[in-house]
Length: 176
Image (cartoon, rainbow, N blue to C red; front, side, top):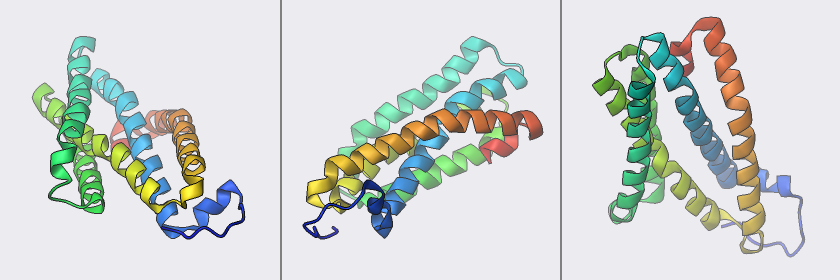
């Protein structure tokens, strides 16, 4: 945990701390991926001829998995460190994302969507807890506010960017 210097530095000074900067990158990466999944899976489903109800089931698999993984998080935390869970969750989500363009069946897409949901479902609570642990005690609120700001910017920008890239070169490369 960074030491308090007794003087107030600017909010962006929080980004100079390597541990905090890494956690911001993870939080924005996970949030961006969440936006891509919710935005592009319906587009991909439409592209391969799936109906709206079927696409809803696939997105439902994502949503259910985010809840389930958060319910079992206290149990997982007995066996794994926060960093191990964070890295593992990003690997699971990344692998599932990479496989989406190769899947065309509803069951496969739902399972991959659930895998992404499990991976991304852990990143929010774990990254927030790690940010809290890394923050100077008197700046926790400021640090969490910066996290929310960065995440909201990614929620606004990533769907626009991924939609433009998807329209130009196809949906598959955006998932990769």
